[in-house]
Image (cartoon, rainbow, N blue to C red):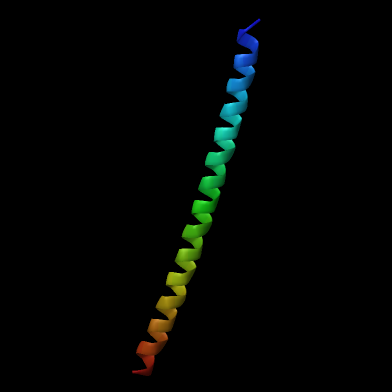
Length: 53
């Protein structure tokens, strides 16, 4: 009888942790993609600038 609520709580916490981790991973991937885009833009700008010289 007492084990059922704790099991439900454990399942709830595990779901919350999984959701939190997936959100962190998603945001981390988005940040990495944004940084890669910025680096690509910087490289293109530097290459164009280099061509002018």
